[in-house]
Length: 472
Ligand SMILES: Cc1cc2nc3c(=O)[nH]c(=O)nc-3n(C[C@H](O)[C@H](O)[C@H](O)COP(=O)(O)O)c2cc1C
Ligand SMILES: [Mn+2]
Image 1 (cartoon, rainbow, N blue to C red):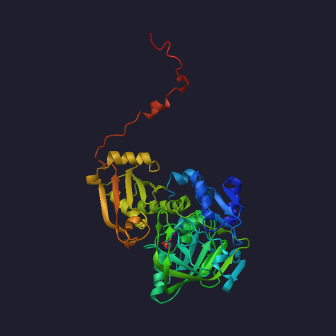
Image 2: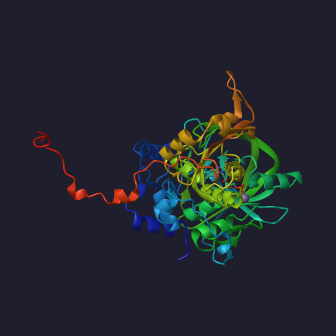
Image 3: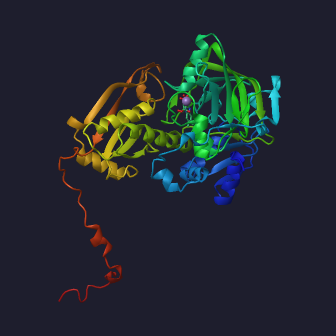
């Protein structure tokens, strides 16, 4: 059966009892949905939550679906260790290109005109000081007017009323490039916003694919099968046939509106300032559609930011430094990246770090490079490498003007006592915690020979309950 959100929920209920919880009490989309996520977060639990009685609307809201490595592993059909302890390298992106189909479940229900009203969807307001409801799991599709390529990405959409939303494309993201290309010609940008699909589809949509477009291929690689596409109703865009909901509209060429504030993954609120405005014309959906949300600024948001990029960074760094072994972006500090390499040249760490920075230019602030005997998934190992193999005067490189100006990182802004802010550039660092390249002989790491440890006779070990007999 072709994979979609429903096939995944079916798998989840079978494979992971308790992994999906239904909340049948009435909830207010304003803080009511995220409140349940926060309640579980306080207990370090992250079940997927399906709200079937959201006040004022008929459509249920699903959140926290992609909040754990375990569920993502289930979605990708791999052991969880593959997600938590490897780099998901070698996603064969070209293996499953998208296919056109004729059956379009996502167009079973069509809302046009006044009926195409965003207020009929269960769109949460997530955190205390957010400027309003936001779409957080919405994959916006646009076509590059120069190459014709279809591009996808998740972008935050600030819902202003039944028809209009603000959208913020960060820094150099392709979404913004496409919008600016249309806007420079004075034309609106056709957009289709996809809500609700298999988690592997979302992994593809937020992958760092080189060049504009290619996200449908990346999604196919993660799904292990092609994404099925049908034509949108109001543009030449192609939308996933088995998505839950699609919003069709245009990004207006001239209009701008104040966007945000909105709580972002670094854990702070960030206002966008004046941003492009989308007008929605048509909303299509499946019968009994499920609206999908990502718990903003929570674990789900950070996991979805880190996980797909680990694979992309692996792929980019490996091209420059073939000795790359593993990549980690720790969930709790998503602006840091750890690379372990089998070092051949003293230039390897710098080359590797720049390849990582250039794959994730908006988000990374520090790349820490270690040798291949260091486990980048173990914070203690990384700290130990810094403590023993890194000399700040020689091995710290500062890139003074890397990030910003502006964006999500608080360091990219200067704040003042009046509550104002000015965008500024911020720096990035490379921490080279590797040993010198061969043929330099570095002291070996202390260890008891493995052979001797394996020969330990545990049957001869017992608790000492009395000292009688141990000495005269
Ligand atoms: C939950 C979530 C929210 C995101 N929000 C935004 C956003 O508001 N703006 C943005 O430019 N990128 C956002 N991203 C990142 C993009 O979706 C992602 O980097 C994508 O690769 C960008 O694609 P593009 O370069 O093709 O535009 C978000 C990612 C996730 C997982
Ligand atoms: Mn892209």
